[in-house]
Amino acid sequence: MHLPHGPRPVVQAGSGARLLIVGQAPGRRVHDTGIPWNDPSGDRLRDWLGLSREEFYDEQQVAIVPTAFCYPGKGKSGDLPPRRECAPAWHPSLLAAMPNVQLTLLIGRYAQEFYLGDNGKPTLTETVAAWKEYLPQYFPLPHPSPRNQSWWKKNPWFERELLPELRRRVALLIT
Image (cartoon, rainbow, N blue to C red; front, side, top):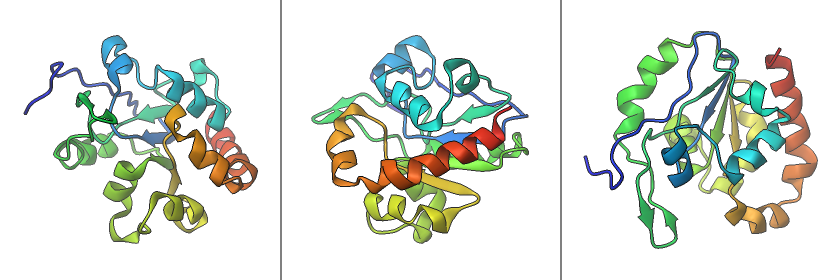
């Protein structure tokens, strides 16, 4: 397994967690700090969820399990895709250790493809737009990266319709 910056798995998982966040893979800043979503994308994600840093990083309430646990390195237009062997190897045992999970957020195409399989739509936009179809178990979301600002502008329904329901459901799970 080639990881240009070496292995440093970044996972947050507690047996009491009721909310599971599945993203793609840690970015360079997260790799360096060892803290999941410790970057501008994480700031936006916490805002989407209506959670403080303290609530977000409480492993007994929020589990964070990316599809690949280590930073894959930089590509031509951003980070490389997550390594595909990680999720099949590690997710089943991690999920079994978190029996209280009631809602799983699938952030980005890689998480959606792994968890939804053939039930996903042809594009990320179509999958996120069909979010009601995946409830109550899954809630598909775009990646909160600042690079995706044009996506939010093209899809105003996301902020108007989806985010209020996301915040409502998260608030019910986080005590």
